[in-house]
Image: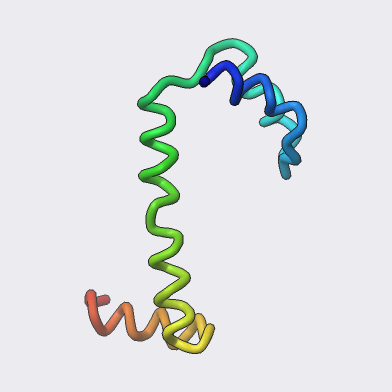
Length: 70
């Protein structure tokens, strides 16, 4: 399955073209995918908080400072 994923990367649109050959030398393993998931896991949480503050970034930051300290 990992080979199928890495072989299909040639059709992906990357912002940085250097990523096009990211797995040409080594194949990703489970640790790579777990790290990727952990890194991106809280994106939905951040967007939920942002939307709860009417997409006002300054208000969101101020609320987070108040909740978690400076």
